[in-house]
Image 1 (cartoon, each protein chain N blue to C red):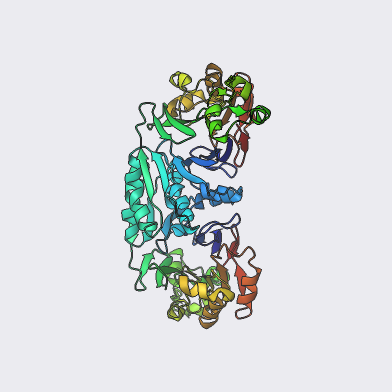
Image 2: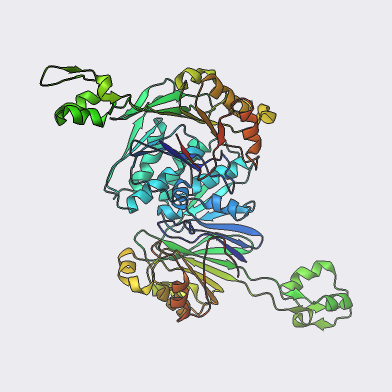
Length: 301
Length: 301
């Protein structure tokens, strides 16, 4: 699992920080999370090819999280794409974008499909053979959700030397990877734990932006390998954080601590701050395994 | 008159070239010409403050010329702006943007006003005390216009020594700047040409993008101080230029030569070319006073 930050800024962009967008790569697929203005420019700048991108998830309908969609869709169209683009978002987005898609992208050989979800309760909104995506209701001025990306349980790993010494037929290997024991032609039972080692644990990544401090999310993200949580403000600007329903670095770290996550990535910094070091200091004092998102940063999960 | 190029690319952006946008400053006003995605990011990156920007002109309704509008309007709203924003564009643009403006910018203390124009005949679409803007119908896949920005005739310059030696009353100076003679209390007639020197000649800038080679525009732009003309392709890709109704560098230079302009700025280069030197070589062979637009470049007109 690999995360590329395309934009780490908040409502007001800066020369270093574009609007929110992150590309998550897992199980040979790409998922785009939010798509602020300039997302396609950042992709090009950072050498990100979006040829395995089919699903886009929009957390909420503020411009800094969705104004890059039309440009991205148009550019994908010019690149000769034929696969549909599927956008998971609150229902209003389709009403807002459909007229522009029809006008500007009417001749494209693919469809843009919208999959609306409710921002008010957690639900699985995407599922395929190897991945599920679940919404995390957040607390913001506009209805807003986070997204929990989870790998599905993987198969056990075959112990090649055992498989070969027992000369196990190919047709049985799928079952053994899923826990079957093996019975030899002589009737000997070989228990599964001798033939396999445990599967790689499924990894989980949670994206939580934009949101005020909300303990309600803790159970939904408990134990994730990596949490991205917004930190628009420092604690010294707590008043402003409360007014705008955003989080401070300390609050993000408290959530990470309470949810016992593996790693915390912070971002969505207000343009009033030029440096992110104070954010890291504030968060690390509470949750040491914190790293800061910057435009173009890669994180292995 | 000063022109800042915010985006010099064409439909497909590159790491160096964003989509079309130029900021023209004249007579203490700012005019934005086209507004591709990332225009606000480029403004911030290049340190351009848009606090005197009230009028935006959109040449045609392809995404690379207008997808930055929503982001720019939103950011201007967050900067505490109160003055209305006036957008001059073909009628469809308001229908496409109004729902988004109402949704995302509904609480702003200013209005976004649209001034539709027809792309099929040249007309004055903007006029104030010191500036006029006239459309230049172009030849493109979508109806497209260029814009001719003209300073109005300025007042003659007073010869301070003469004004002082005749002790001319303040209330008469306005008339003298506009050509009046002066009659002294003794009845002596002092002709205007002794009291003034000729006005600074009004300057004119023409923006022509996107367009195929079109001799029809020559009379509309004859003698302008500066012409921006698109050069999406080199002559070696003439077939592609004809298919897409764009111009080659040689064609832009032929237009500049036929129209006897002062200077030619070329831009809107296709992403297939990494270097702009071949464009300059091709154009300069026909029209030597050619310069190349690059993102962030300033030109004094």
